[in-house]
Structure formats: C-alpha cells, structure tokens
Length: 238
Image (cartoon, rainbow, N blue to C red; front, side, top):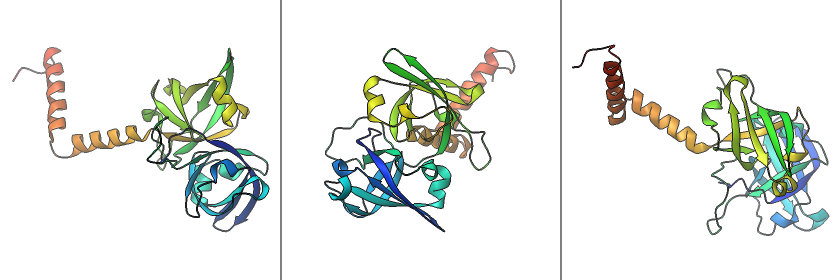
C-alpha cells in the first residue's frame, strides 16, 4: 500500500528488453534505499514494482525492477527512455503519519495530457481518458470533483470532471510542481492513472446488494422508487 506522496525523483539509467518484458535500472535513488531489501515494493510512476537488485552507494544509489508485458501494456513505463526522471515512493510503513490517500499502485489505465494553464504560481492540468472498451470499461464513474486520483503515483485532488469529453483536471501548487515529474510533461504525454479504490469497493457492494436477491439495500431502493412513482401518479398507492 502507498500514500501517493512522492518521496524522490529517480533517473532511468538502463533499459533491457526480453521476451517477457523488460528490466529498468533506476539511478540517483540513494535517499530511498537506506532500508531497502531485495523483494521490497517501490512505486515507480505509480506502478508497484519489486526490487530485484540494488546498490545503495554505487552511482548515487540504484535499483532494478522487472516489468512484465502486462505492466508495459497498462502503464507508460514502456515509453520511458534512459535519463527520464520517474516518481518514486516506498511502500507505506505502519509507523508513519498517513497523508495523500490509499494508493495500491495498481495502474488502471493511461490518460493523455491535453491542456495546461498557469494559475498564478499554480498549474492547472487537463487529461483525457481513452475510449472505453469491453475489456477496459470507462473509469469516469470513479472520478468526482474534489475526489482523489493518483497520476503517475501522485495523490491529487480532482478539480473538474467532464464526462462528455472523458476529461478531468487537477491543480498543482508550486511545491508539488517541484517535487514530481508531472509539471514537466508536454501536451500529448501519457500518464498512469489509478482511481480511488474506495469507489471500486462501493460500486461492487452496491451491485451485489441490488442484484443479490432482495437484500435490505435493494428493498430500501425499491421502496424509494415506488414512493416517487406514487407521488408522480404513475402507479397507485398500495
């Protein structure tokens, strides 16, 4: 589990492809490797990856992660190049103060940056989701103004949601702009998106309650609908 509060910016120093995926080496990472062990989880641009090798001191500290083809398909990590910076966050410790929101670092999809507008010292960014498919339904039901979204692993508050355009926006304050890669991305760049997991749980619970054979929530909803129909004169009072 992660918080979406980026700890450090690392640099891609090596990319090695194989039939099953690729290995990334992330350098300039010493600040987050002090308590690192092989097998630990580190979120790289919002994707939870397993450390397979590391060195705390050589070349400013580095670690290696392996990305399966599924990860490359779901995220923007397959487009990273040597010298690209990436957002890094270690898995959340039980002893730390919690900030951001609950982030699994399981990327749902990518979105495209379609707008950027300075607002004083802040920066407003607008993103567009891809067309939904049967395999990957729309994520718009999970996006609400003032709700949470993780973009490249960064916990951000949604400022606007435009269902008609499949678009949503966030605002980065000056401090955030300096600490993450998002403010440096050009129009047309892809970003990793993870919607708030709480919304997913709520949706599944409601579907189960409404379709699961007349539970208490289903009966309550049916009663509300019936009262509305009676009030509108569509059906007679029982």
